[in-house]
Amino acid sequence: MDLEDLFKGHKQKQHHHEYNHHSQGSYGHDTGRHLSKMQHLLGNKRLLLVIGVVLVVLLLLAIGAIIFLLPMLGKLLGLVDAKGIQGLLDSVLQIAKKIWGGAGA
Image (cartoon, rainbow, N blue to C red; front, top):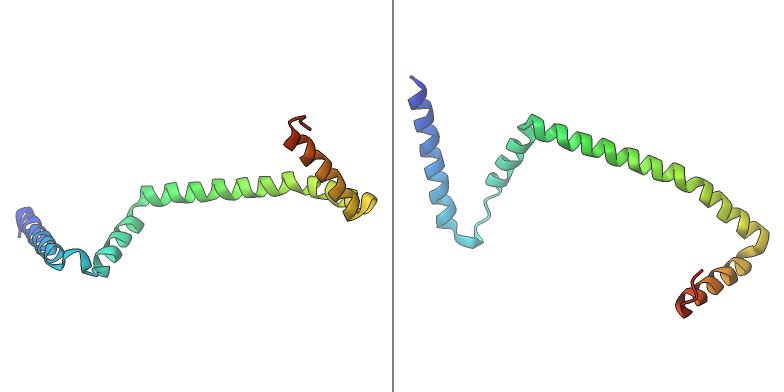
């Protein structure tokens, strides 16, 4: 068995797959094809590396956003404690009226 025999079998399988795909029409449910594509994608080391790097970057951004927003949340809770909820809502409504009227904040 040499390399041509190996590729010959692959071409026959590919032709058989294309025939089945065309014979099913648009209503066929070929889940095996989707699973095969998923296995191929998961076997791609470069793609897995890119996905891993993207997930790490997103995780770092989420942690950074939490660290950035915690002091603001503390200030908001301090305002609610000092003015009460009604006073905070009055302040927000005054700012919203200025923005709506075009005067800016």
